[in-house]
Picture 1 (cartoon, chains in turn blue, green):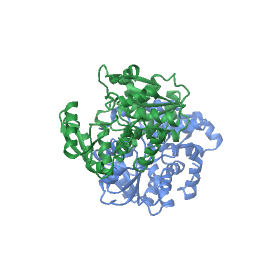
Picture 2: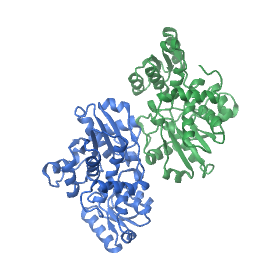
Picture 3: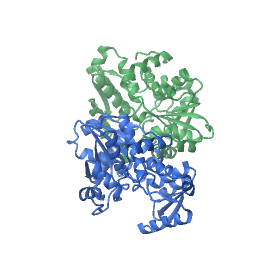
Picture 4: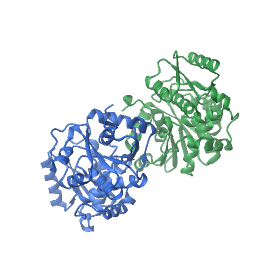
Length: 317
Length: 317
């Protein structure tokens, strides 16, 4: 990590300048019928249109760009079967180095193909956290590659922060800004951006009831586990880390939990009205807004759509 | 109809100025992975993001705006169960008049709701062309409303022409421009636009094998029927009209037919790579390009995505 403490305003500005040429400035969508239905103005920041189909490209690229030349040369590694894996593979491809992705051997074929298509190396392991961590350790020892954590990393957090920075530059004066919370990389980045660049904007998180660790951690101040893990929002299963929890406790106003039924309903509305493809996790903050829409009535709100990588054969409607 | 003969360049320019404040200037999407796959540069004009979710808003609005005040006051009418019905209902709503939409009583509930939500009046009839035409005749007699044909109308054609005009303004120098063909309103408008504003651009149509009337009419010079009608591309079932056929014979280079399998494959690629929702009919021209991709290798091509109104519960993948 180049950034050694909670990113300051200048860090996020510098990171944005650095990754800007390598990422898409994703569009902001809105819809009159959605506004009528939600009872407020809603601006959707479409990171489903980001490279690799998710905001993770921002943090992955920034973390890779933060390495010194010698470290970068030896390659990047991570364990993930989700969007972060592709983000690291993309970063390695763009920066002309190697990506070693440790993946459970039961991960969907399409996830492996995604990494391979970007030129990454997939290293299979048993589907346990221990096996994944051991796999990473071996890659580090064998190749000297640098491990990039999906969210417990200030360079990654500062990268994710640039999505909401773009939104706030394009749509100033938001009263509320919503993001989903899994490990908390996107949420803590969003919260920092609002704090530094638009302090009048309150940041709200949406979390699935079936992975409700963040709401507990937010209350207790310790990294808690969810009482049970069972949700369609497969990008939001992870617990917070100490780094993300600290930022979230400082700068997030509220975490609203939603059921899978509410997530699917919100997701379907987005497909129908906005005509765009999002993954279930991306629908979570919009579901949170709809669930408590009386609270946000007449307000100017923004929502970060985290990604659009969904198995089309398993759409829940 | 205000325009009494094949629209000239000035007609299309005037129409565009007139409807511009009332329609969305839809975005143009592109994707590196699609380009690699297609072997050429592809620019997608996203009319799935147009008002009512389809290009039809353009022609409907222009036809309504072409009426004198007294006629407009008495209302608009059409028979349709598709996007044109909603386009006429939208035009009536925006211009503060009435829309009478004659619909077969077996039309999907969602189509009726769409018209009703826009303030239109739905008049049910038996599901035959005769009953539909009789229904329209009765509305004309009873209310003095003006019938607006979905494509056999030069005002409508000139309205649809503005979609490709926007694309050619944003992406000049296209070698090829693809559109789907059903009744031919969008295709003839596209062909006129290319002819007037970018004569170096060849216009290619995509047509489903399961509604292959246009390709026959294109050969024979007469309005032909399809040998059989059975396709997933439910927006392209109609035959051409004399007006659209004349323009298409003059200014379209080629009609490429595609199977439903090819349509579904193209549609899935768009959902996966572009992360947007399109209806099966909209995937037809892209399927045509992929089918004959050797022909278009290395070329700069544009594709009009006609719409995004699809029953999400019946996605073909």
